[in-house]
Figure 1 (cartoon, rainbow, N blue to C red):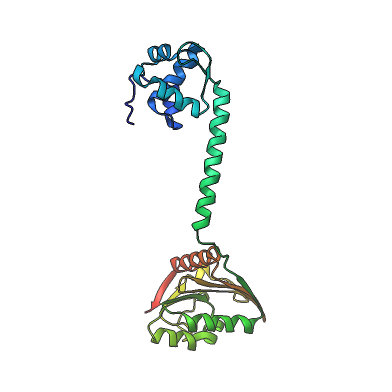
Figure 2: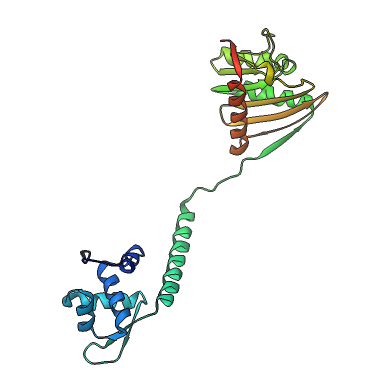
Length: 251
């Protein structure tokens, strides 16, 4: 039933409306709280709630555990529970409602399966994983690498490029001229940003879903391969940041 907002509602009444009380319920509770104990007629007079509605309103407040009824003339006397007790009741009801809703929603939510992370140990294993990522990419490959690794995966990158896969290569060594290993759109990293190639990185982003992040030091290499979103996001950021400090040298 529609209940219009009563005129000149105070902040306490507006706060109760924010907690789900109707305008009539809020006004009646606040009026009764100030009266102590009163009958329906007195509450209607104090609150401004129409007399024809007051007992329905009081019944709803009793259901909310905001008001109690005591024996008395006519339909009895009414007492508002203390604000502290009302707060406890509302908090318990809200917690129960949240728990119930969560339980219902959990039954229809698709389970979230954590993406596995594979560790790669060894340089040859890293190159094999990179070749596989490049060879199986369907739509795009973005790769930040050094000349040694570019030469090792160049054949697979060229095949992917020729079949229509978007290929972006970032030369981390800042080669002055293309070495022939990088494919697709090639960026030469700013020379000032280039690092010592005895400690190299290799980052691959395949179909914007799979990532390889590796570190190469001498003949040793370690890396991870995963579709785990956090690592994929980091790989995407690394390549984007590398491109931002690079100059395109071939398309």
